[in-house]
Image (cartoon, rainbow, N blue to C red; front, side, top):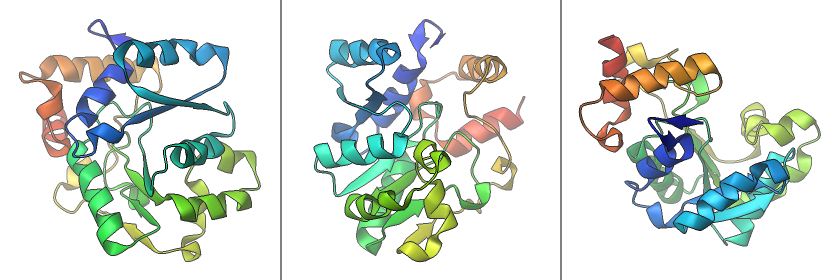
Length: 207
């Protein structure tokens, strides 16, 4: 879908361009013909992409990380229009400096849905992915990890600065969400890329 004449994917990638790791952004899509427009989009713009399984997203994720020889892989969902590059950078730095297998800001949902950042050590994920024994684990890339915190060294990031953020939904999953994020973008008087997650939450509060 497009918002203000621009594909949703463009908004995500534009925000990630402000990350210190902008040169390592890869679009991990599927081999299905229905995802050909995503591949064409990436080709036209010189964006790195990887094609893997449509239904086994966990395998797609790890195969992408292995193909690009990433020590750590950061998962950003395609429905996370307002991904915060500072949150991404902080999570990656924490994973590297703390020598963690998994770093996430999802536990407890103290951040709005749609601003999820998850960093996994590729070698660790490669080992545990073989234990994913249900379709749910194949579809939801990190679900198994949350259910098995004893499997590695995990670190969770919590929002304790803006309590009103908890419970907010900024994920783009349906037409109602599309209308809401479109309205939010129109309210911004600066480029959307310069708005951090806290500013976006406060923008919503001013509704």
